[in-house]
Image 1 (spheres, rainbow, N blue to C red):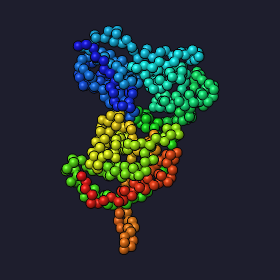
Image 2: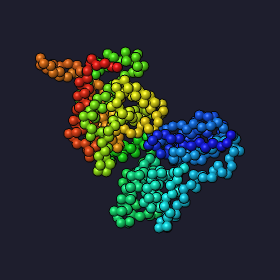
Image 3: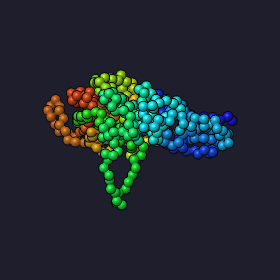
Image 4: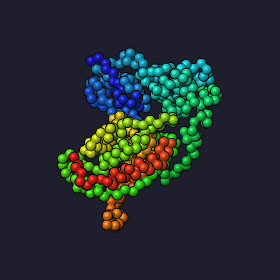
Amino acid sequence: MSQVELKMPKMGESVAEATIIKWLKNEGDRVEQDEPVLEIATDKVDSEVPSTAAGILVKHLFKEGDVVAVGAAIAIIGESASDAPAKVVAAPPAKAEPVATPKTEPSVAKPIQHSTTLTAASVGNRFYSPLVKTIAQQENISSAELDTIIGTGAEGRVTKKDVLQYLQNRNDSNGKVAASPAPAPTTAPSQSQPAAKPAVSVDGDVEIIEMDRMRKLIADHMVMSKHTSPHVTSFVEADVTNMVMWRNKIKNDFEKREKEKITFTPLFIEAVVRAIKDFPMINCSLDGTRILVKKNINIGMATALPSGNLIVPVIKNADRMNLVGLTKSVNDLSNRARKNKLSPDEIQGGTFTLTNVGTFGNVMGTPIINQPQVAILATGAIRKKPAVIETEFGDTIGIRHMMFLSLSYDHRIVDGSLGGSFVRRVADYLEQFDINRNAF
């Protein structure tokens, strides 16, 4: 058998790279076709990469923690361990990137060279995505200069936003913010400076738990969202008695026919989709001073994982689905999310997010916007409460199923009138639920 290159698989249209988390097979191990060889991570999704051929794993071309471009060779599989000639490692990851010019001579540093096979940086064990390196090359940012940029991404990685901010600062100061041996504290927000963190003294009564990779990503994303968007939250209380009674009436027949349990989540999504059609400016994002109004309605639904972390799978084109389709999509995505079986594309492309805090017994919440979206809706627990019922014969008191809806929105784009009107419209659709509607 000739040697076979195991390549980083394509994991979605918007995914250009992945991080190697763990090698499941060591060099010299026997692997069967379709047997998992390593674990990789893209954003919040972890996946296994299976072998494309049976044989001996001859060589790892990257180490754990390396960021690798899609399509790049990551391992060599041959007939035996002796199939490891020098040509197998003709382009080791440590040498594929040009060596950085010493920081004492930034004026003669060479531009960053874009590599199609790996994304490792040249100094300090830092990693740069292909996009970051392309921008650096186009803007003539040297390797030494690139190493001085403070990253605000996961594990301190430099993002596109960091590079563009650096270029803006450099241009605004007519080149005074040039490459220097060490980054100045004023070139980045204070929250990204490790030195600003106070020392914490712990004793034997304190358990120290290191954040896992997903929790670090969530933390970074939440902090970034609060720093990006001025959050405002509007609340509405809704009488959902008809919806609750309808679901109780049809849920057994629905499960028998569709082999799916119907929860309240698809009913909430249905109401949200209708309200978005009434108020399309809720379904948008902001690019500088440009408002991008999305024609597709892709609803993200926050899902709690067994680990305690959170992930947001996305129902694409939710406005084109009936209630059965929404129910199947909700159940499928939530089940696979808990089993870590989602693909990277299934957690991207959302235009609006729903989080059901009522699942945990909470009556309301103030959710944080899932960037780059401009709004997120939290649905609280449904409780039986005494309420005033208006009838043609006068007002009366009755026991009703009530719930709170809370909408957090980006006040740069969404003002109180739009945000308040939208969440009120969602409540109206839930309150006007037709108790005699056909479930199928």
